Amino acid sequence: MDAATAKPVPRHIAITMDGNGRWAAARALPRPAGHRAGLKPVRMCVEECARRDVEALTLFAFSSENWGRPADEVGSLMGLFIEALEREIEELHGQGVRLRFIGERRNLSVRLQGRIAAAEELTRGNSGLKLQVAVSYGGRWDIIQAAQRLARECSSGALRPEEISEEVFGSSLALGGVPEAELLIRTGGEYRISNFLLWELAYAELYFTSRLWPDFSVGDLEEALGFFAGRERRFGQLSAQCPAAAKG
Ligand code: FPP
Image (tube, rainbow, N blue to C red; front, side, top):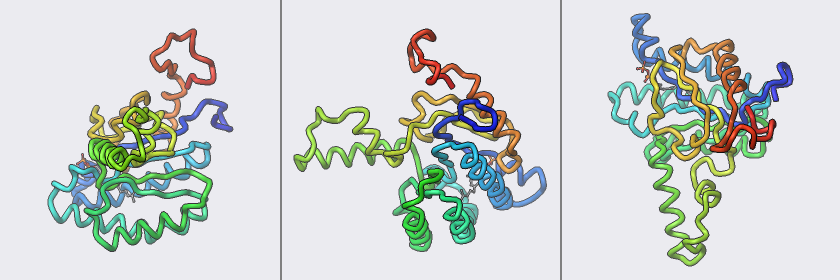
């Protein structure tokens, strides 16, 4: 519940931050300037989610497919992640945020891997907002790595195939232990999932806005939360079967 409005808030919000390149192009700036401008709404969302008692926030910062972008854009994004981590980590820690990165880390530079490991270690014990940043992440990659992990456990005898339930599979995914996403926000005017959280979005409400990510404001977030609060979440059941508490 949002203490200020008494409306239900999602336990977990996932955001696809799209539109940075177009934001930069509209200002005759290079694309990396759009990515840099995208840090402002990231800060805003972290603060607002913490303030509204949202339990988890997951940001799609760099997909498995983004490796195919021109090398200078990839390089400047990786540099931005390192810079943002170095600059913001103490503040996030002070806010009680538990920061984790999800994605194929082996593809990242040793320096970025080191910064990520240090940030995760520093904030591991924090009990505030669970903040996940998806970098070098793809939903299909995640499902495959979970399947491989479980297959290894089965072949070592630690697990029987019949024991693989939705819960067991879900906890083998990169977001294992984080409540399932209840609201997906995608900026930039595209109506696609684009290989984000394929398993976890099964019952999420989907909110699309044409707003470009660097322009995403508190008002835009409130609009998305209002959309969520107005949805009846039935999980495949009938309206009359759903307890009021499950409606959000
Ligand atoms: C998609 O817009 C955005 C990205 C690929 C990068 C998003 C990264 C940030 C906002 C930085 C966040 C940093 C941290 C540490 C969380 P696009 O480039 O595809 O935009 P376009 O569709 O207009 O070209």
